[in-house]
Length: 320
Image 1 (spheres, helix red, strand yellow):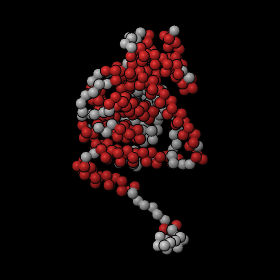
Image 2 (spheres, one colour):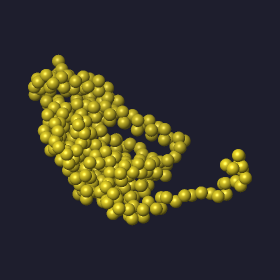
Image 3 (cartoon, one colour):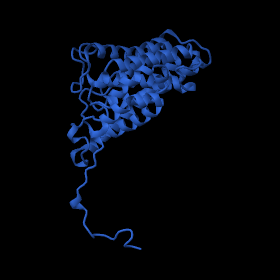
Image 4 (cartoon, helix red, strand yellow):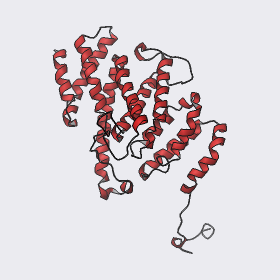
């Protein structure tokens, strides 16, 4: 009975409307729960069940993407008030975040059931995106890829997906015993391979992300998560010290603290603060001059002396 239901679930999940696909989330959750239980009991999955996982995982990963027509405010409107419809945009973002969370739960469950399949889809998708970005660059304005999916200049939708999948891959590893890029090996969930090998894979993936130049996109969805990944997996810089310089340059560049979207600057400043704390003192001394020069223009204090009324209020000593 269960195996007869699987093709129907896959059909509904593949629907373009999120309302239709999300209607089968409870059933998918139950099915994956059954498969995880079978695995824990040492029962081999049937051919139909394995095929279902192979077919459903790419669909789940595809649905992690923003829609091509997802509306982002213009840079000049990014810090505007509620009168510009930003409340509706917040609602859309909250709904998408909830959808993405549910999809991640299913993807991570498949990662426990079939770790090799997880790597072949999640990891390979992120790697392909970074390779494409390295070869053709990335756009901030265009949502889709220039020549169709996977071809030509990368659109911001798949660029954001690659960064998100990198985070998902790293979080799955760290959920075991934490990440130690230069540390000893530890067992992965379900005994899936060497911890050292898995962490080396994450290190290579972070290197691909940095070297791809994907942070060059000024779209507001890109830089905050990019910098968050680098801080969240900060142990990477303990073994890849040379990567600190280009990352710091990105932090101080046009898509970092000087980002045209004022709404994302506070988060980037926060990640810069955390990133600086990761670096040893000698490294900070090397970059201190560049750092001060880059942020000096942002440290100006704009005060209007005319707005301060003389004698308009009692001073500290007058009140004694």
